[in-house]
Length: 277
Ligand SMILES: CCCCCCCCCCC/C=C/C(=O)SCCNC(=O)CCNC(=O)[C@H](O)C(C)(C)COP(=O)(O)OP(=O)(O)OC[C@H]1O[C@@H](n2cnc3c(N)ncnc32)[C@H](O)[C@@H]1OP(=O)(O)O
Image 1: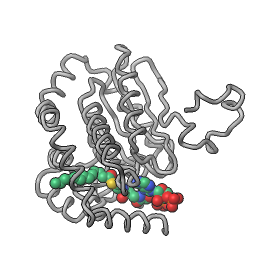
Image 2: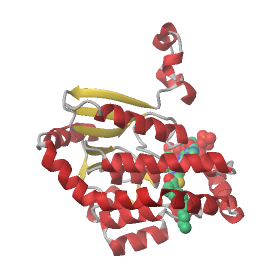
Image 3: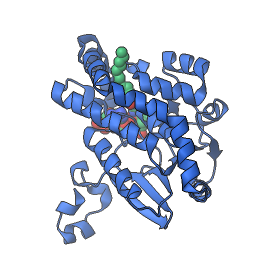
Image 4: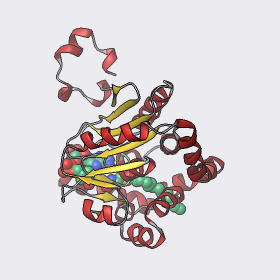
């Protein structure tokens, strides 16, 4: 944690040189009293380790605890990557105890972000595969950079794994059954233009994404909270309750699936290819 360093070290070490163990992993700022910005800051690719998901959850709770704050923008400190999704190394030959804990933290991250009373705006200025797409879909509104090389989607099958049932449900809810069926099977990563066409994102921008995200956050923050939150609960409550009831079953499915030798070999191969690239 950055806070464990001496004040002098904190002032003199460039943030770029800090290891992840020394970083705060996320940064929170308040551009105005009603708006918070939660910045993902886990180089190199903002992948979601157990500690990273726990930190995001803790930060959302911290922001929520201020009743004045109505909207939260989720962004990345990396100019080209929103989040590369789950930290694949967490699934590579793990201990069962760590793997189960990792998954409980991922579930909590989804449940916390998807159900927060805050209006949540994803400012997607870069790649957003798999767990990155999960973060974006858990928000209320998604704005993506129009840069054609960026990709977003659920590519799990390309790693030899499958999205859990609740992520599949979220995908279907967001883009519709048929598109989700094809997208999931092929592990399809969409360009920003394609993502807009299927409504995986709500808006594309050429200008800095954060500028538009802050404008949208202002609009969402101006809606009276009670009615806005009641609508959100009506729309999202069933999916949240369903996972709450099945959490431990889902941990078991995840554990048994990931620990299979064939799946482990697939994950190993995928990681090797990523590093070689
Ligand atoms: C009955 C059914 C039960 C089902 C239960 C199973 C449920 C499974 C869970 C499913 C839910 C979600 C899954 C995921 O999120 S899996 C992660 C998927 N993510 C990816 O595939 C993205 C991989 N990364 C990339 O494509 C690129 O890194 C990216 C385009 C994001 C950026 O490219 P760039 O060229 O800028 O960077 P590098 O590729 O060179 O990467 C830099 C280093 O970072 C490492 N890296 C990248 N991504 C990850 C990651 N997700 N986890 C860990 N590490 C990652 C990469 O290896 C490089 O490392 P080195 O510098 O050491 O080589």
